[in-house]
Length: 432
Image (cartoon, rainbow, N blue to C red; front, side):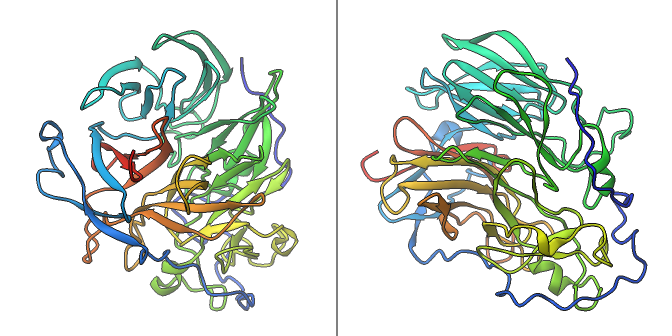
């Protein structure tokens, strides 16, 4: 069944993915808004250095030499499994951990109880499977071109149902292989609504807004099924997608690169390194996050949106000042990926909050280090970013790991996927 969608009514200038300023050859400068300076990496002062424990059977590179991480005092960290290009994860009702491998088209099942855990292939032959989530015994899987639901019983899946198909990816005829953000995530709300992300074609490809289905959006399938429709728009790449303890949907967004300084209209390394912050936002029906015409500014919390002088030089593409502020943020180019919530399982100060895998920057000077970020959950809001685990990057910018996602297991430990070190870590509080 095809996805039937309403076109987004906001027209966009047709920007090629490799063109940074196609809409304005001489962008009109604007004065920066009177907001705090851009958010900076969270402090790691409360963390302690610990050697990552590695079973000899798992000691292939980069663990053929000792690796150290920054973790909370009294916690431990170990390499739990080696999974090539491990991405997003979900815990099954039987206590197994599922891990997606978009690069191989598979979903793996890891069964705890042995060291290393027993690995089997749950699904194979898929199109870049990425997002995974469970509701009871129903497993939801987001591939690059569709979203499916399966019945999961006794470590196997049956009764595949396609909830949405025809989603854009590099195989889409109109995109001709050009798709930078084909991987999709999925979440299910307390009312049974299914949400999934559709990333933008490229950096500032504004034509995405008028595509069918609209790219750079979060889509919603109603609880009783039916066609998916846009739930939130202007979401450049909302790979982080999760439901909070109060049932609200949140996203962590990879915002644009190579943005011009609004005060000068020039693209400079100094400005690009700190702008725009990555958005962490609560989504409501019809919410607009502004891309590519508006960018969050300042931070770390309640960030206003300011116009992008390259794509919205006169402010007539979208009224950025009329958009609600972004609730929380990560530093520019942090590249947030997987997002999950934990509530009442971990010890303080991590008992309740959002865990976000921070992949780290590719175009920031100095490079922003990868980490697992934690945002405390307080009275229905996310407080400012803390760091749960770091140490993956050396002073010279070289890295041995890049976290993708983190999720709390039934044993009360945090499991972290890493698609650079090809690993899943177990980060355990004292006594677990």
